[in-house]
Image 1 (spheres, rainbow, N blue to C red):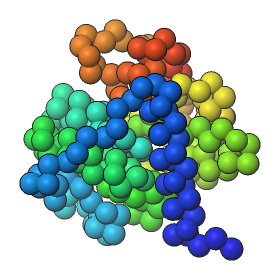
Image 2: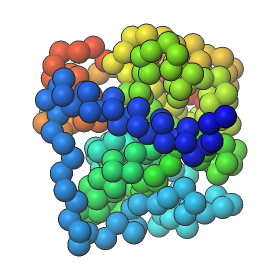
Image 3: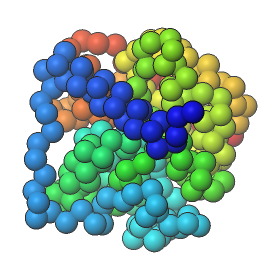
Length: 238
């Protein structure tokens, strides 16, 4: 039997390997060094450092219900959305420590005070920490497709996790799901449609980028600049 810690470690290794393969194929630069003098204490958390029972005001300046991004990568979405909507609270969940630290450093450098990153497995955070109706929205952009059939069980969106998403999003809240892999999109929609509390999928129209970083994530930027198709959807919590 594989322990929970070892299972998480295997997931992180597969996740980092996939990112390395994408970096090689798309010419992606490696993560830059983080300034050792940069204070990340306001922006970076471990899962056991999140307040229990959950209270957003203990990590944010306000008690506004947060929007959560699962898989924050380099933190572009958190930086852009946090800067554009300072009245919102944003929490990114990132399973890879090096990416969690990089995203947090991006927020600290940019002085984005309404966004945080937690290094954790999203499944644990949703099932063990977030109570019912505690999130304003959930963003899932370009999750690992887990290409091999034997790895499909590792995919983020399955009926059990979708039930957790529906439980934690408030009525009227949104769930955003984007990917560049058609089969992942089809499988993800099938999982999301198993929960009657989610209304969708609703069409999402792509907008024209007005500057070099006018994208939801770095992954979207690379895909669009290389001419790849992006599959987008939005669901509303009934």
